[in-house]
Length: 589
Image (cartoon, rainbow, N blue to C red):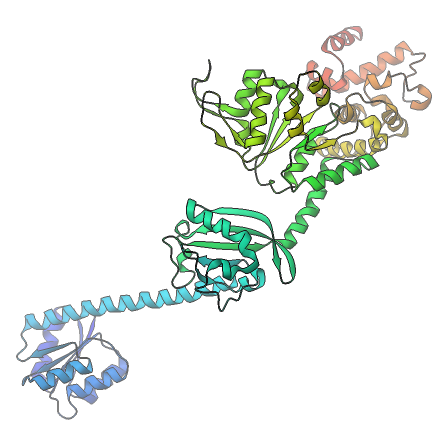
């Protein structure tokens, strides 16, 4: 409810005004003098004042002068029975809002009250919003300068609009003088790296980012991540500072990641060593090579026998490098026919071939911004080889059935257990593609070439199985470990893992004996009961009863582990299903 003060030395005027205004729903007080009016104002500030010019003593104009002197801005309406141009001009000059002549009828009074109270409401709201805006601006400026990243707002003409304090530490900018300068001048040594991103963001109208950029600084080289954000893309960006042009400007954000980069490199090295186990000199060389390649986009060819861990190298290269946040897409080239592989890699459009009922995005395009791992690359056809060569040369693809090229940004890691050089010599593989793939080769040695790593690998697998099967197997006994080291491992690390898993399941106690290992290891001809100890069978003079009991134990354990699934039990034991069924029949199981 609005509060109105009526000041007049005529009691009848005060009574009439009060009656009319209270009937209209206003809270009204009256005063007969300037002093009395000031007493009311001291107690409660009115929203509107009606005051007669002629009062007994100081006039209504004197009251107006005092009210404005106190900084009060409420509407003030002067009333007079003897109007004159001189008093009207003086009243308006002092800040009166209206000048009414007596007699003032009810309609005129209420219309003036309603008009000026509405005006006061609008003015009060505007002042409140201005105060809130100023407070918000001060808050944002505080935040703007407290942000640890360097932030530069730039006009569409590449003039600096504002900078925060972090620009001084990260970019070496003179923050006091930067405003209004050409951006390339204000950025100094960082301009060469930042300006292309700013121009691209303005041209394309979307966020442009680049990570791991080396910038020269007065304290030496630092590593930064740079983002250029069009201000039109950030609804709140224009609040960063007065004068920011959101229509076509751009915000540059530069983050110092020098320390983080060092930590990431350390974590990358840990990731590589967690993925690939080994202490041998040959594996240490592989680790060093993979670490040096992690932060590059160089195409890598991983070679080695089946089961040596080629996919682990691709995984380490991806997750340890700058593309770790992007997709890691795997394709087994030997698992698909030529037509299916081409569609799988490059995608296709609807109707490109029989069965193509809808558009499909290829694996290469799915890997945009990340890494594409092509396993068994030696098995791809000449047609697919040619298309893959274009990807590596032009960085673009064409979907099957579509002639429009699409740009892609992928790092290619290929793997093979074949000699691509031999395939080139026989005309089975393109020489130009071979050299494109083999920019750097990472060769993984066979397990028999690094036997000193076998106990370490076995220990690692046992730890995994302990966690998976909720057991506490401490390790292999000396006989089992000796057998693992002596065996030639045609299946390499993959075969070793399966063998340790088999033994882990078959072993009843907390230590794995040689007798728990798969039959093909026991029957390899390089192991005897003397080295196996009392728990192993003698293969030079086998005892049929002992063998039967051993097989019965193994079959029972495997069937229990697989819930009675004979096919799974056969795979677990490393034997065929036919052998599994034959053994069960022979043992009456």
